[in-house]
Image 1 (tube, helix red, strand yellow):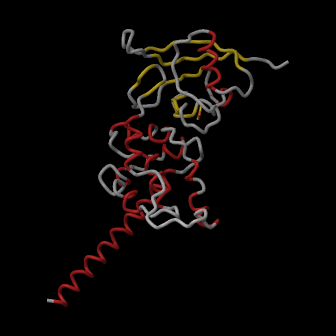
Image 2 (tube, protein in one colour):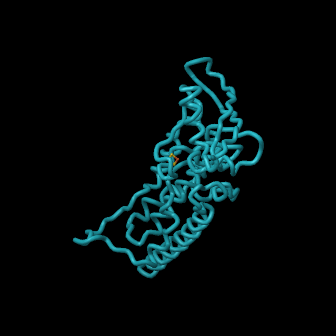
Image 3 (tube, rainbow, N blue to C red):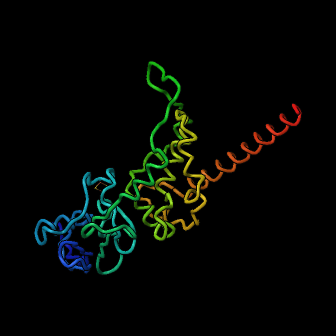
Length: 254
Ligand code: FES
């Protein structure tokens, strides 16, 4: 017989339609070996408190909707095994620095606004071939890990720079920009890089590395940001060469 273990949960609560003040509610949950935090939350909702609010959908680390802070670190609730957590209790809180809508549900508008700025989709101007647009394995390997991003917001809300400045694009949007700028089929260089080079783009990152530590898909956003900075230097060098070339032509013509 599989033995259950009682685990104490302390969960952040906030209901703007009640008193509008936050507090923590305590629950004891009988958990099975390998059980994840999301499963315990569903258990609490089903058996003890139906008003407990949180987002989830796929339950397999694909939809990106169950990001929350668990024992002080941003994680996906559907991927975090309770047995992997240290300490005698599990503390569950909403994603850091985001406006709380209710309990563990946060307003992700600003996060997705920033995502939209880098145009996170394939841009093509050439006429596409009649058949599938093929990509060599070598070119595909360049974006292998980057395509795994599920836009869960874990990396961005773990970033201390984003906590104080929601206009900073943040690691998730920068990973998306780098993913499409590195895609051999994409032709939208100017569109993807436009906001990356501005204030609140790649140079606003302060190398805290929290994005890389927390990404539940094993992506390294810090490396992507470094890649973007290299692209920016290349862009500036080319612009300089073009400018100087233009000056030389005008001097020669005069
Ligand atoms: S429920 Fe979809 S990522 Fe967790």
